[in-house]
Length: 182
Image 1 (cartoon, one colour):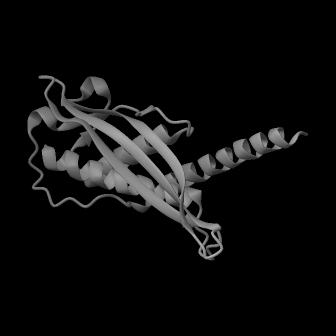
Image 2 (cartoon, rainbow, N blue to C red):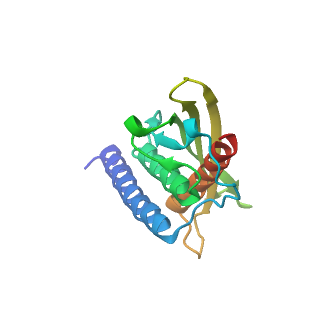
């Protein structure tokens, strides 16, 4: 096998492993009830009470990131319990958007100028719209999240754990803003 082909197959394998691990971790997080706390009064305007969250558009080369982030947003809204997540035909309001960036970047180097820590950066834009009026309560708002991992970390951090950390930041901010805006 050529050197180039082995790099491609190793990268493909790594992507499949990371994707599989993330699905398992997001599933476990949803079972743990790791949601966003809300101190809301529970009074929601009728035109916003039932929300549909469309799967985000993926504008990155990172496979399945849009599914993982959408599922995490839905789970967090359900855990918050201020709004009811429903299918689009039954919804009073809609959340739509896109994953615009997934970037893996060198974060830190050691004294020998060797990279020892990387950073995952994710950026999402979302719109929160009232279906009946077309009013955009939140219009193409940008949310970002970052997570770091070390190459020689004895605690076992990895790109997958950094990705989850970045996604948590985004989900926390999305839910806080959506619930605040209702």
